[in-house]
Amino acid sequence: MRKVALIFIAMGMLLFGGCSDITADHIKKEANDKTENVADKDNEYVAMVKNGNPVDYPDKTFGNCFENFFGSPTWKHFESDEEVNVVEFTGECTYQEVPVKARIQFIIAADGGSFEVGYLSFNEVPQDMLTTTALLSTAFDSYTSAPQGETNSEKGEAHNASQINETDEPVGYISFNNVKASSELAESKQADYIAQNTRDSVKETAWVEGRSGNGIGEWILFADNSQKEISAIEILSGYHKNKDLYLKNNRVKKIGIEFSDGSYIESALEDSFGMSNTITLEQPVKTSSVKLTILDVYGGTKYQDTCISEIDFIGR
Image (cartoon, rainbow, N blue to C red; front, side):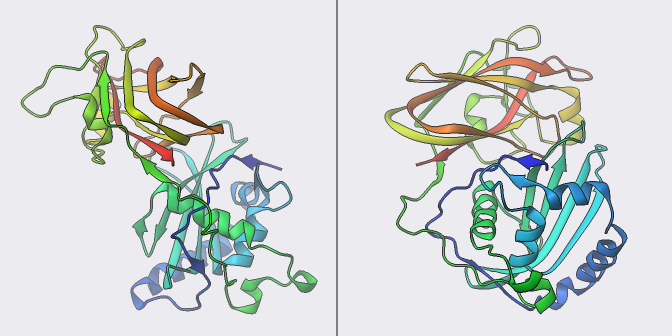
């Protein structure tokens, strides 16, 4: 059974439940999803995701939990422009008491042996990783075996989800007051490439190291006077102003992460335009600083500059 690691965090302000209707704007898209669902019924990648499970839920599969939780569930497989295999799920639910159609995409690893959750939208509006993990957590936590194998899709309704634990301290994106880098590429007429670009929530800007060569050993440091508790780090590696610049410049392949208590981890990053890499820590770390060092890169087709568009920290 395939497993995928997810951040399942308690979110005090998110409420998910079932719904039975979608708006007229989505009727055509829903019809296409249902058609492709039939066509991909026996697809190997669809079967892999449906039979897989997160490491935190060894006895619950995506297939069982999703088809129990969501109304009108559909599954399909497609290949992206970057020749990456993607399994897409759609289903109906409610988000903060508003009926929505959820679209969730699973990215299949290049070796075909594992997958990760890469995208969520509600009514075609993209959602962040916190909303994604909160939704998945709710779907898995609310799953119980239906009588005699009956699923919500067979009953024509979605499961009513309970509110995610409100007693836990809220978990969300956190920020550090100071950020600096070992080097920065000189400003051009088109843009600047400063370290602060990694926290401006604009993927079209980037920190670009300014050292001669491919940037291995260059670093960016986030620091604060107070300690933060970090559960995960999201890195949008590369220059995401457009795909052409993304491919022309270096992207981070492996990164080292050091915390103020001296603890250190290394993580490999996937190379995919438009997709963030989420590094989930085995245990939350309390720290007043995070130093990220470039250890290896995916080479650009034209330039040796290594770029990072966004770095976000998840915790409390």
